[in-house]
Length: 400
Ligand SMILES: Cc1cc2nc3c(=O)[nH]c(=O)nc-3n(C[C@H](O)[C@H](O)[C@H](O)COP(=O)(O)OP(=O)(O)OC[C@H]3O[C@@H](n4cnc5c(N)ncnc54)[C@H](O)[C@@H]3O)c2cc1C
Image (cartoon, rainbow, N blue to C red; front, side, top):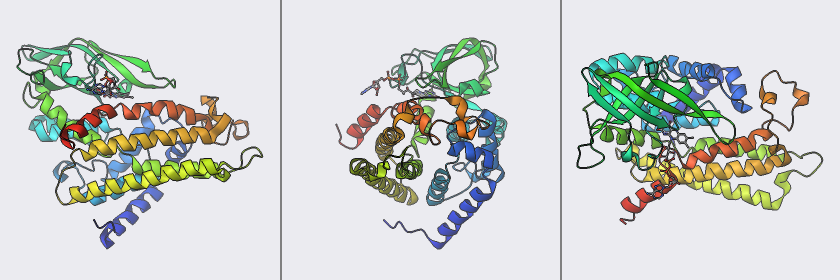
């Protein structure tokens, strides 16, 4: 494997750096660096910045507005964005439903939905999981019964990330129970969140955030033209989508950014005591994490090298997901340790931009390190839990 970048790739990297230096809005940069929650408008403004440069729909075919980049260019781009700590793109429209629409949808659906996803006019959310159907998704119970030119949808979806902002939801629903295998009879449909009978209820997570929701459908009438592909083939389309969800899930570049922040924070003496970095035991923990992260980076590069020569990532993406999220969570724990007592209080108001500097508790983002710690317990659950990823590895690599 040759990991040196070519002259053209280095020039591309410089172009991305230049763009980030000039076009990444200062106010959003500051919020990101100080770990202040972004508003819906901030997230959309950043996505529109990428769109204007033609760099939003990185993976789409060029004919629909994609970049046409090589796997290495995509890797460079993702790494430069993570190194600059830019906001994560909300994946549900651009990375999840759009590939299903341009691969399996009708021409009418492509024309109707793709342009609004491309310029972030519409916000999408994902309606797969249900109470009682997560890892065992094929047991889902939300029904869509045909009534003339409509489906009538009844059921509940849960853990719907940022569903409170969404204009549309893409759902896996049961259109037939008269099937040999549970995976059959499931369809992929698009539902306008404004339709009568759709209710969104917040789920407040352990750290007090409103990030996920429960979405109820009570006799919701959905036009049949909102069915994507063939009725009963939703499971096949849904699986394709999960592969998209798992790419880049290791988050190596972002962990490297956080490692740099951790080292900076640990290098400063705290209230007259020695800097944590002078403590041998803590330094060893950082060193161990850095080595593990480097090893994961090389695994990611090996996967990239095989994608570059036309192979598709198989069970490697499960390995990257498990190790990547384990290291993210190990980083969360070290950041809490580095924050010391400052990790105990949570005073959200002090992270509002106009909070007087001198009245802050701690030295910056320390008091939210425990929030981040609790919030990120999710990383080993969503996108297919780490236990399920281990089952995939056992089956496809170990042949068990
Ligand atoms: C923060 C967050 C955001 C999410 N966002 C969305 C979203 O936007 N849209 C959406 O549709 N879903 C979303 N999800 C749902 C997510 O996909 C599910 O939580 C996940 O698939 C696990 O399902 P479950 O929660 O029902 O747990 P279960 O499937 O009940 O699993 C419970 C535990 O048992 C383990 N387990 C289950 N089956 C097996 C097995 N066969 N072998 C070994 N261990 C097993 C699991 O690993 C887990 O530890 C989100 C979840 C979280 C936490």
